[in-house]
Image (spheres, rainbow, N blue to C red):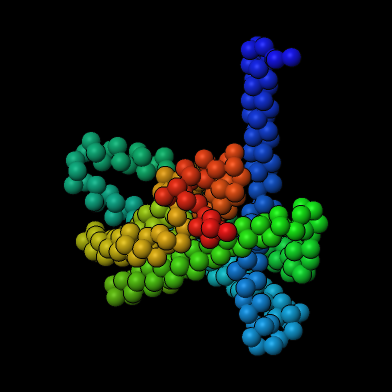
Length: 355
């Protein structure tokens, strides 16, 4: 019996409502469990980065697998603790120094605003009064203090992943019940890991060069907080598109805070802008373009979505998550249009497309 048009319409409406409910439930869970999920995502990325290194050490240097895994876990633990404490120290130093200079900055701004006339001066001073910059800086310092607890949870997740690493291929094969399908899943997973690893390595190199250049500019200008500003630039540069803008704005604001001299601030701002433009718009796209094959509009959407749900951490993880979603959607026929839209040239997974 052929269903009537009303039955078909009713089924489609039911399917649509169920989809909306499921999507809303997923968003709710992503938001409520964001701390654990963020730590889990970072742990997966670290596990992906170190798995190849462990395999290379154990095979080339003839080191037992358990020893290589233990050394990798110790290295991750020490690295995460050092990185989190360093970022906390630098952020607290910047925040404390900026709060200490608040009064002198207000005086410098008042003298600078006087040039625009009394009406503009009144409006700008009213806007500055409404914007509680001191409270915002203290809030930023409070968020940075949560890095250490997150690092400990990430270390715990990575340790359990290392313990289960040997059995993952067996589990995948038993879950699928088909050896060929299990091989296909491992190829897709390897493609995701390989592409994300390349992106992170390139991004780390470009971010390090940007941070070193900003440190050199501050050092030549004999400004304080050169190391802290370089660290903040290095970290924020991992946020695609807007990270460099935020880093540049913080750099200019701190230059004005530390000197109170508009001329010096303009010189530092122009120099840092050139650094961000050359490395962010020429070197970075040239190195990462062939690695990711991502649509620029898709990156903006992913950044907005994950930033709205997970905040700053979501902005850092937006690109790796988008790479994984794009490749998975490419291998699911009814989701392939999503992968085509997210990719730059319509071919999402060049690593396994020919297999």
